[in-house]
Length: 97
Image (cartoon, rainbow, N blue to C red; front, top):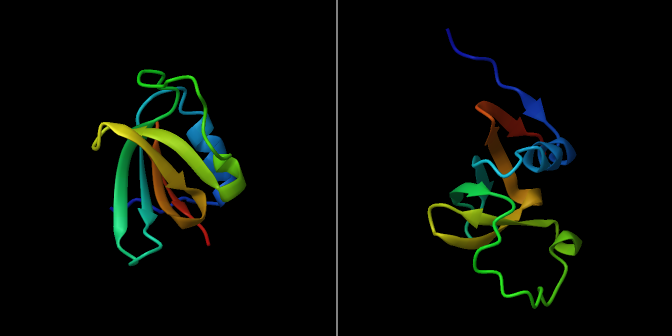
């Protein structure tokens, strides 16, 4: 029996990401440049490698979330407007347009 898809808004997706409490979560986004999908295995709250200078811009102003990507082993920006799917705490959510 196939599991029914759970649809959430982008705002709800941001809340779910914030509630991940530093645990790893999976996000799938559609790349703006060529439409391909990119999968992130990421987490919030990583402090290692931060130099304390801060960023040259505010990611929230561009609808971005700074995450540490476990695949790339570095910090990446997660684009909220391009978010397709999210898996947090073992539950999968699909993001509405």
